[in-house]
Image 1: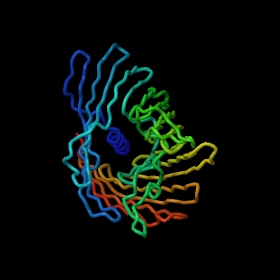
Image 2: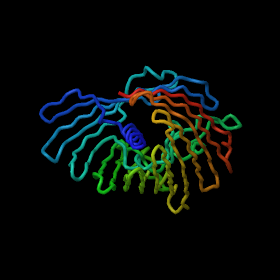
Image 3: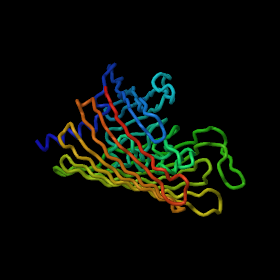
Image 4: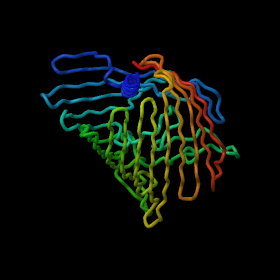
Length: 359
């Protein structure tokens, strides 16, 4: 029973394109479809209770066998185009689109709008809405004591750091060798305008300039024990910064129905030439336990520290239930609070109830 629970848990958590519906298959060509409809009832700080589309998506996958070892592939992910006042009926947009070539013995290379190796860094985020150490650029939903809108700093990390995706990205990733997977990315500037700097060395042409990153991922099962260990280093040159260098590390393990993880990331940025470096450090602990296979409980704690001695501390806890392999619901509470030399000190609370139907 114990081994069955482990197998079912892992199979559910790793279910992706393997469960896709085959739309067409002939002469080495295959087209498949899978997706997820995600509905969220949310109450956030200083906002009304609302019913929202929670990043629903569907994937179209294409593959063409070239020979025994090589194949070409492509993928497109579409998501509903959402607005706060029209969250379910604003059309669709292309969230991901990429193509590449894969060798079954070595790995793959792909080009386009896609996730980077840093997207696989986290092992301590078992939550649905709390996020993790790579959740950069998420605005706080709340306001401060003077009625001002919240900022990026109140929610954990600033808007720059390790990039989990790139709109013009080249991605290389090996197959797993004895548990180890190696990956690297190079992201071109999103804006095709010529790279221009002002007298301070700041990028004034592109809103998201070039960057690269490389990482090592590890996953291995030892009887009933599961071990994960990840390391990623990245360089980024975004607007308003001359350079941003980041390093992230993660360590996790699972025993039976219990999983635990710790994530860490350090960003070091320089605003302009000859200026001192600024930095921020974030770490997160997370745990999940399946009381029974369908019913799980989870929690997380995150702390972020900035150069100017501003700290943000947050935690979350919740529960989820899998009605079938493809249908699950969850309840979650998440909160963040900044302390130190900042005016944005009002606690940010979030209450969430979600339904996800995968197909």
